[in-house]
Length: 162
Image (tube, rainbow, N blue to C red; front, top):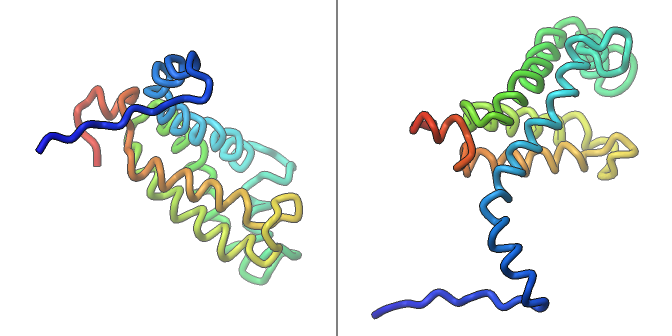
């Protein structure tokens, strides 16, 4: 029994050709954006000096769970640097599509922890330090983990992915 694929009918017909021709770029745009927007966060954590985005500040707030520095703040410092490297180097790797699933898996875990254990106590809205943005990053990273590098990636050029 032969099946036929239903053709999408567009409300504004002439736009259909545009959407169809751009569809192949939609996923690479998601992957590249996910990586590119992580890069500045990692840069600030590693090289931000006295700004709030530094790994030291992150360690202090994680150690105190969003309050003043907690008693175990110093023990959080290696994790904060790890996250800085993940965001900076991992973001670059996502942009170019190299080791895509390896990086995405780490971002999934990181953003799950951030959403559930760090930001959830502040509610949903990001402007109140809530879990809105970490949840969005988590979902984007899950998409990238599932799809991998895609057609426009170094992973695809190498012919191998995890």
